[in-house]
Every structure is written in C-alpha cells, then in structure tokens.
Length: 492
Ligand SMILES: C[S@@+](CC[C@H](N)C(=O)[O-])C[C@H]1O[C@@H](n2cnc3c(N)ncnc32)[C@H](O)[C@@H]1O
Image (cartoon, rainbow, N blue to C red; front, top):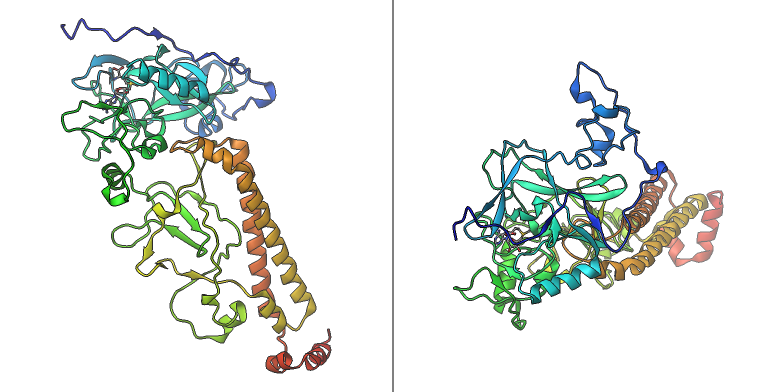
C-alpha cells in the first residue's frame, strides 16, 4: 500500500482525559492556588511565566482566580496550547509524531490524553491487549493508583515513540485539582524532527519490544529499566522482530544469565543511595575507579534505625580520646543486623515521591575482603561517656537525648513496617509509586530521627567540651565507694 494513503489503526481522538471508574475531581475552592503575578503591560512575561509561583510548582492557574485574568499564560493544558505536530510512518516502529514547527527547550508540546483507569484495570487491559495480539502499547502510569490508556481514545501524544536519547520528557502537572501528563521539549527541536521521550518511567509492560531508537546509549528494550521487565528474563533469536513475549527459565547464576548481564551493563545502579544496616554504613555504587557516582539529582537517603551518623575514617586510630566516645576496640563491636535499604526520591516538581527498595545484594559495593570503601561507623558508648563526666546534669542530658534517639528510630522502624507492603505492591521504576501522604509521613519521621541524632551528638560534644571529667577514672572503676566520694567532691 502507498505509505501516504496508509492510516493508523482506528482510535478516537480526544483532547481531555476521560474518567471511567470515577468522576473527574472538582477542585475545591480552598485548594485553588493563587499566584502573586501582577500584569505589567510593558513586560508580557509578567503574566504567569517562568517566575509565577504556580508555574514553579507545576500547577496551572485557575480561571477566575488568577490575578492576571485573561492574560494568564499558565493554562496551557486547559487551553490545549500544543506545539504543531504531524503524524508520519516510521520505517520500523509503526507511526510516529514529528515537530511541525520549531519547538523551544522547555516548551509544552502536547498532553498525553486517554482513558483514566485504575491500576488493576490497567493490568487486566494490558494482558488482554497482549493476548489479542495488539503490539503497540499505549498505557502509561499516571500515579500509584491510576494509569492512562490511549489505546481506544487518546490525543496525538499516543503516537510519540520511545528513544533512549529523547528530545522530550513527560512532566506531571496539577490542573484544576487533577494530575495530567504533558510532553515537554527537553531541548530545542527543529521542525521536521521526530518527537520522542523515554518510556522507562511510564512503561506499563505489554509485549517486550526491542528498542530501535538507534541511540548510541540504547538500552536494548522498551521499558528495560522497569521492574516488571527486570523480573522476567526474555529470549530473543537474532532474526526475531522487535516483539517477543517468550519467557525463559531463570538461570542458576547471574553470570549465566544473558539478559540480566545485559541489564547490568545498560542499567547502572548508580542512582541508588543505600543504607546497609548490616554494617551501618552509607553505600553508593561506584564507578570503575572506585568513586561514588550519582547519575541523577541526589536522592534523599533515608536512614534506617540505629544508624550512627558519625563517619570515622578506616585508618588505624590510636587515641584514647576515641575510646572515650566509642569504647575500646569499638571497631569490632558491630552486631550483625538484618539488611534494609530505603530511598525516597522526589520528582522534578517535588510533589510526588517515590519510595524504593531493592535487593541489597545487587547494589552493595565493597572492597575485596568485604570492607566498605566508605569506612566504618562506630557506636557511641554512652555508658562510658557518662561514667567519665563529673556532672549529673551533663549525664542526664546525654541519656535523655539517647532515649529520644531510640524513640525516633523505633518510630521510623514501625512506620517502615507499616508502609512496606504498600511499597512492595507498587514498587517499580517510576516517579510516583507511593502516595504523597505516605511519603510525607516517612519524611517527617526521618526528619525527627535526624534531629534526634543531631541533638544526641550535640549533647555529647557540648558536655564533653564543657563538663569536668571524673578524676582518677581507673580508681573509680576499681572501687565504687571511691567513685561516690569523688562525685561528692565534685559537688554532685
Ligand atoms: C505509544 S505507541 C507509539 C506509537 C506507535 N508507534 C504506533 O504506531 O501507534 C508505543 C509502541 O510503539 C512502538 N515503539 C515505540 N518506540 C519504539 C522504539 N524505540 N523501538 C521499537 N518500537 C517502538 C512499540 O510497539 C510500542 O509498544
């Protein structure tokens, strides 16, 4: 058939999301965010441009409430202010979308519209489409509970293909109380260029598809970084086309496993901050030269319990002053604890959070011999410190702070247990796997823990610096009675 006459398989073009299993949310008046922009006729950018508080928080202004009124420029989703684009047939990836005008970096290109469905429904539909032989997948994640399915109904955004080196990206915006997904230009895009974004954050499974984006950094498969993909192992023959749904049994060892090997090569675990309770150390994956590497904006490291945030170099130490803090031979005193890894990452709009946990074995990075390259952390020996401080007030302060620190740890521990099933259910490599309220609870508990740690160590440092020490400590250890006398002598 002549390519010019060919048309894509039928679907209904829509410019607004359609809600099937629930009603479109109505924005409550108290939830309306009103910016502080003041329109200045000599400066057209004054009407809700880059500096607008709503723009900065990825929220569209609500008509009738924006101080700039009709001149407000921050209603692009609502007004369908898309860049010009055009459908075209690619050689090997079905249909695609071209820029039909020059597009500027950061510009809103188009909204990804479709049917908003529950996460469960998305799973069922995805399986049904696959069984029915539909090869192109159009379901993307919206949030932890919902997806957008553009298979039957959608905007032109449904034709945008994946690239491992994309010129566009998805961003989530709050529009009149609903989250909506927009495609935005990552760079200047000249007219006639194919538009593409990285599906990895959005991919909802479907048949496993070989990526034909042609980028030098190509990861090989669509959605290769998604959890669903990594859990399965897929087999391709060299002459297979880009689709495959054939699972092969897991190999006995990692080394025998071709896909996992490939994924290790293409999906560096370098964006994970890990706290390993087993040895109470902060680990990050390392590059070939042994340096810590962070490929993404630094995630917030969420420290689990009983973590002593005092990094001491591994170099041999000799001073007895350290023993004062940690006790003699404290380096050998680490009790093995169960491993726990956690991470919270906020997306670019700092609104939606992702709590992730991954198998420790994949990510830990050690020097030969099982040593951490980030050095050893030592337990502070409170009992020892208190024994040597001559003032009861100082000792009590340290003990009280230690108690608060323990309570904050326990609080974080129980919160972790509470939300762990939720994380496991929704865990995947996406921007929004845990609801904001859960993430906020976690962040609050983490902050309390950090504050308790800080107060504890400050109390120790302050009291060591300002409190007289017990005279003749050895004598005190040897003879409790002498000890009591000395404390009395010191005015206790
Ligand atoms: C959202 S649709 C994109 C539009 C699609 N090409 C079409 O013809 O309707 C996603 C599907 O396009 C194909 N696709 C997109 N990007 C691809 C790529 N880089 N390599 C191979 N196939 C791709 C895959 O079949 C995928 O399931």
